[in-house]
Amino acid sequence: MTTTEEQNTEPAERATSHKPLKAAALGCGVMAALPVLLVLGVVALVMFESAVPEDYAEVAPEKMAERVVSTSEDAYRAMGLHRAIPRGEQRTEAGGRTVNRLDSGLCYPGGWESLEDRSVKGAYQLSHDWELDRVPAKAALPALERLRDHLKDTGWRVTRYGKSVNDEWEVDAERDGDTSDDGVVRQSVTWFENGQRLHGGNTGPCAYEPGWKEDDGPPGRPVEAPAVFPAP
Image 1: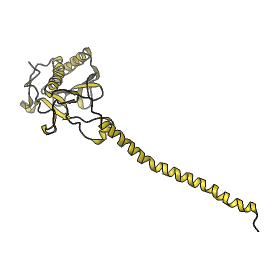
Image 2: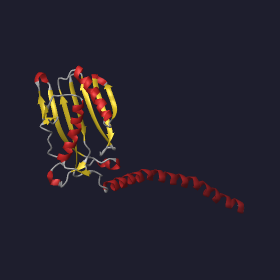
Image 3: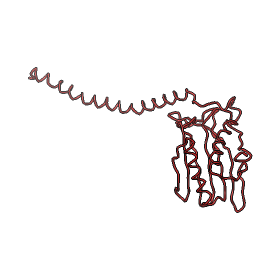
Image 4: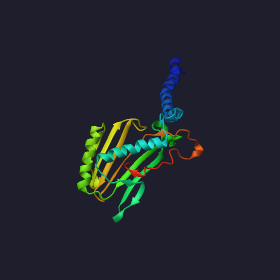
């Protein structure tokens, strides 16, 4: 014959044994849901940022071209170089070349919105590149020193000056300004000992092209470098 105490003991033990199983199941459920919640959170952030227009100024490509080229001209003149560079890419004697070129590129947003890898409609970014051949060390190195001093005197922060890898000499500088990157404008000039050539340039901030429409083609084009760099 089973006593009342024995009858009550077995169900209590079963109830107690079910608690760890329920807790484990709940924990597994939460862990399984975390990746889904994370993905949903990222999607929500991307959608939110995509709905907010990028804070770019509206600037005509011609005006932006003047602005970008003038930064290059200021650096070039400070170096004390007196050779004019024609527009485009020109081959010179002994296999050398000169470059005076403006390029236009698309703008891509930062932050979570960058996961979409989608360019900003109507926005463009101009860059100016120049290159001079047949520049020996006796001319290039003093020119880079003059440029470094000039940049310091005109509000730029020189972030690199001197010899780097592969027998290259560099002057890199930055300053706070109107830019789409991180609030910093940058420019650089490099002398390549192998080839005896100088290369410089800078990139302007992203901007919206006024009146741009999707059937106009890529924004920021066409743009041309000045016929002669630097301007007379």
